[in-house]
Image 1 (cartoon, one colour):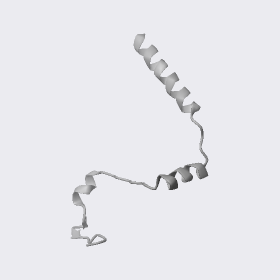
Image 2 (cartoon, helix red, strand yellow; image 1 turned 90 degrees about the vertical axis):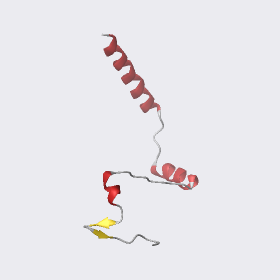
Image 3 (cartoon, one colour; image 1 turned 180 degrees about the horizontal axis):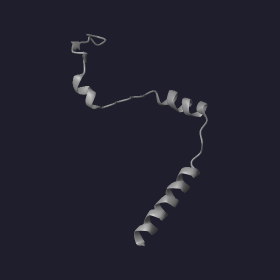
Length: 64
């Protein structure tokens, strides 16, 4: 019973916090992105082990 109460309380707190956040328009989000002036996307995956290879052939990267 205690576990169910903890889960229920966590769910209520999460949904309340999520609904309390201001919904930003696309323009507001883009304004933040432009002002931040930094963006980085890093994606790690199993396929990264074969970086530079495609169908068994070495592929040149930009700048090489």
